[in-house]
Length: 250
Image 1 (cartoon, rainbow, N blue to C red):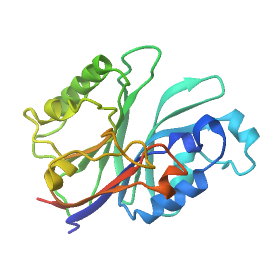
Image 2: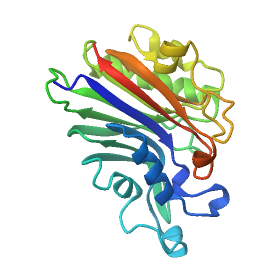
Image 3: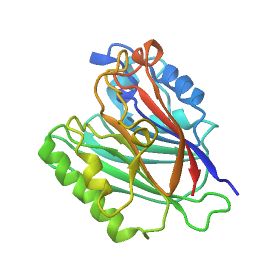
Image 4: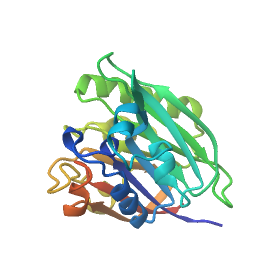
């Protein structure tokens, strides 16, 4: 029976640097591989974008999540959130285990900012219940995030058995650290860095993380280790650091 999992979350900034100056998707793939995660939660993933496909000679023929998954993560799901004339982007989950069901739910709070939550059910060998994974990228404004967090909570309460193992990860944009209160009430969710160190992780900006924007919440797991992956290597490819955690099933 598979009792341990290693997971990671990373906002890839659409595979390019600020102001679309440089394609960094190939470097991101190498860094993500080094995390050696069983399941990867990704935000700001381009499903398609004609302008960059014409501009960058090394732009992959497949979508970004397929390119990043490559031969390492056999299963993947992509939730298209923001759609525009030249393409679209959203969240993605890469998994070494079968994704038996997935759904992308629109949680946009305003027409100016399209957001979604990507909910996957993953079959882990030997587990009685499927693992539920939700990848999110929440809004920039507090009032929008409040509504999105309550929509997330409602989905968990209404669709998931209380005993089901659950991981929620992504870019919460939670400057004021309010998300934990909503997710902890009656759902037994804990943030992994709070469990091991008492505080959520500093993840933004990646070159010298100061702000606690990215999170990993879990239910039904013991957290063995949690780590921020920032510094020069990640600063070259995204404004967010990546987070990882080693988990043991309770």
